Length: 340
Image (tube, rainbow, N blue to C red; front, side):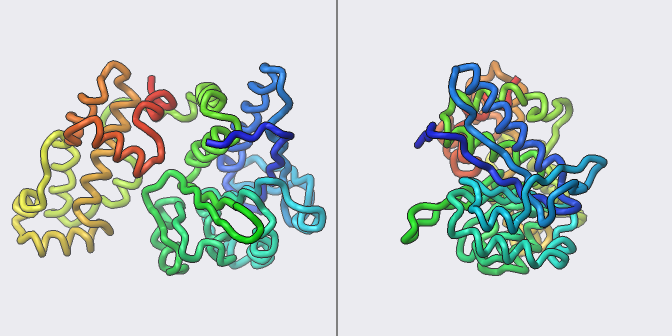
């Protein structure tokens, strides 16, 4: 992984009325903590964050707080953007999009000169509208993933990814497009940016500073919103989903699941896809991943082999493969970052 230490990375954080406050403050805090740790080591600041909006001054968010924009989009375009441009999402992205065609145009114009373009959560709609995500993989908030895919059919929406980093190589060199899932996933993405720029050790120190925001409350079995979003009202399918969540340690061939719903395999697969929006095999994989994440977060004493067995993954290697494929990090790194 390349680490760049020369000079501060300028991050232009783009906001607009109604932006999600936590999505702006989360990454901002990550970059701020990174600077604190670098200063402790006698090194210069790694990041200089500027708040940018269509007009300078106070910009209201979706909560009681707002942010003070020091620069306008026009100013930034005239003098050149930072190394990184970061666009945050909104709860009602379709309305914001309709009201902000100038922001989409701005993104399309400045993108070729931006080394790292980041869109958090539903902010991915700005990149998609500017044509930047055509034929590229992208993450977004689970609640708008279907809308993004429908509205921009050329975008390869990965509804399960925490974040996606896609590299563009063109005549001007290498550029990166980053997209993330919702709200707190912006913190995961910002940590990944710090890791890319200054190495694993610094990113881990920052993650530990923020760990109280990153840890999910323990207690009864809590499966993520992506699984909740796939939960269905159909009694047969819903019952099978519940059984899957309660028996993660067991093999789950399609024939077994179809039998529990008293359907033929073909019919079960068709109705499951229709009801849950994904094939049964994907739901099972999601459930195993969620179960493993929960064990890594709450049971620091369990060997990885045991974690794998408890969620029906068979081997430590299968567990590692699933984490790398879906989250882009190893189970060990996940435990270090989010575990007790």
